[in-house]
Image (tube, rainbow, N blue to C red):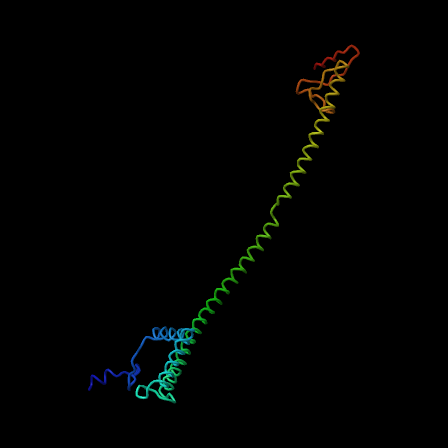
Length: 216
């Protein structure tokens, strides 16, 4: 008695007393009910049921009286059809509930995927906008082409200017040679020779000789 009292604890619920119903697998029963509902919702079931009821009517109407198991008013057939209808309705409802549960799970999954896809789309949109902003600050192909064309034009102008200067220098050297003066050897038009290099600016004399250097 003391051991029984010790086992009864207030922090644990009591076990229900009364008739214990047998336990069954709800998932297996649900699959079985869905199979029956699918079978009853086909054309084969309607055709087979029509053939059975027709044979039932013909047998219990045209067969000898001692062989009829359900004579006119067909009470047994009415009972069978009532039992069928009473079981078919709950089975169909159970199958519909299971299908509704699956549809709800699929809808939640679709909503989750749609939310994730929306987030990915927004992220990609932000990344594309950032790339556009970054590309706006990068030199494009057309810009590089225009800059290279401008540099080529400047180089052409510099080359033409150099050629003009060389042509002028050659003309000056040729004039100096005709006058009997020493050519400047590539020195600029306005650039005189200095004493550090050992060359002095020579002035032409009537006899074509250069003046002597001053000593001291």
